[in-house]
Structure formats: C-alpha cells, structure tokens
Image (cartoon, rainbow, N blue to C red):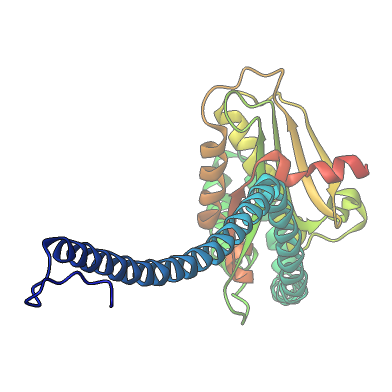
Length: 325
C-alpha cells in the first residue's frame, strides 16, 4: 500500500485527489520560492558589488573634495599675499630698469661729451681766426649797449657805425651758427628712458610728488665739481618739467628737495600738503615731459626719448623697505 486510497475498481478517492493537488501546489510554491531565492541571491551579490564600488567611488570623491579644499585654501592664501608680492616684483622691475637706463645714459654721456668737445673745438677755431676776436668784442659791445654807444658818437658817424656792426654780424654768422647749432646725432640706436613718478595719495588732492630719474644723485650732489654732461642736462630738463607742472597747478611755492634713491639714483621730492594745488598734477607733468621732445636737443643728439611711468607710493617705497629702515 502506498497510502493511496482506491476503491474496488481501482478508482481514486476524492480525498486523494485533493491531497495530491495540495502537494503539487506546495511543490510549485517551493520551486518558485527557490527560483526567487536564486534571483535574490544574484541581486544581492550584484548590489553588494555595486555598493562596494560606490563606496570606493565615494572614498575617491571624498579624497578629491579634500584635495579641492586644500587647493582652494592654498589659492586663497596665494591671493591674500599676491598684492604685496606683486608690489615687490614691480619694485624690483623698477630698480632693474632704472639701472639699465642709467647704464645707457652713462655710455651715451661719453659719446655726447666727445661730440660736444668736437663742436666746441670747431667754435674755438672760428673764434680765434684772424680779426674775429676784435670783431666779436666790438659786436658784443654794441649789442649790449646799443643806445648808449650810438648816443656817444656824432650823428655823422652813426650810420657808418651801424653799417660796420651789420658787416660784423655777417662775418660772425658762421661763428654764431656754430655756437647755436645742435650737436650732430650720435651713431646709436634710438632708446627710451623712463622716469618713475608717484603721487601720494593716488586719488584726491596731492600731498606729495616723487620723481625718480635714471641718473646718479652725484649729478646733483657734486654739480659744482662736475662738467656739464648728458646726465646734467637730463637733470636740468626734468627739474624744469617739475617746476612747470607745479606752476600749472598753482603750487610754484611747494618745497622741493633732492635725495638719493636706492641704487644712488636722483629723486626729486615735492611736498604739496601745504599748497592749494588746482588741476591735474599728473597730466601737467606728462605734458611738460612730452614737450621736451621739441626743445631738448641733447635728447635728439643722444638718440634718447623720455617717458614716465606712474606708480603708487607703496611700489616706490614698499613696506618691507620701511621696516628695514
């Protein structure tokens, strides 16, 4: 007997059919559950792997975020010191450029002096020619005291005296032309030199002006012991430009002093706080410097042009310098 209830004719009982249906249902449920379990195991393995990959990616992203934060902090620190660092770099560039321009001026000063000496020798030769000295003396005397000299001679001789004076003028013309002639340009490449100027404060009414020249302070300090050379003429021209600019802004009485700057260059310093300056000091000074191109023959001779760079006071005299002083 296998537990199946059968009738005399081998027919199954209704109970057996019902039990077999339940057993079949159970097997189906168990099979479905086993299949779902396998699928869930696969999903769990896949999700676990994805989770681990995500964790690794999150860790990598976290490291990247930390690196971004570190770089951001370093960048902020660099930016915080950039203004002072940039000022120092500009200051160093100014010092180097002043030195370079000073070297150019020194080299051309030698050539300029030689050209000036040649011009003076030519003038001297004309002035010492036969009879020229006497004619020059007579010409200068009449030019200086024309009315008095003419009044001291009889009217009859005045025309003759004037005629002789004009004849002397014609004969002395080559000498006068040589005296007033511009020195021939040097055989050099054109070069620009730069003045460094600064107004304090940068905005608002000016209280101080500083102009630094690429020439030696010795040109001012020992002017009485030196011959006038190219450096001297550059100094004259810039001092005249400063004076002209001060006059333009109604500050002609502002105190001016001269001082050495850094590597021994000449600095012109003007105190304006006690002056009632009117107008644009920078524009006035720039205009004065621009006008030099038309009147400064020594610049044309030496192949030089003069420019200006305006810098804030903290670049001219960095805080580190003040601390060191």
